Length: 86
Image (cartoon, rainbow, N blue to C red; front, top):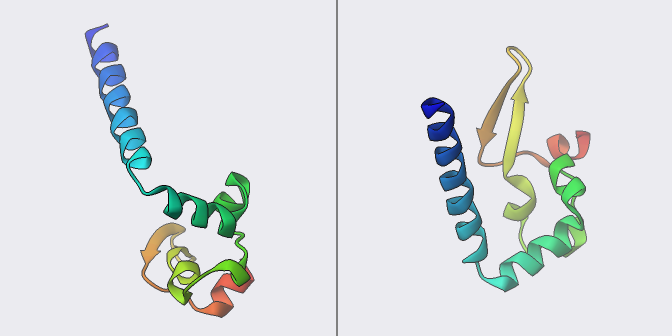
């Protein structure tokens, strides 16, 4: 029971810190990101409105899947062909 309580305590602290970091971000940044993605489902699927992006970096950073081993790999810049193929 103690281990379960420690796991719940750790999880609640993590969620609190994550929520705090989200709420201290400037509201203009949130509004701009919301305009680009439109909805949470679009953000999770990687669908964005390219015409509203203010710089190429906003649409070119992300993750890719290494097809050799199926790992999710962080990358600093994806090519436009990779973005359009998703």
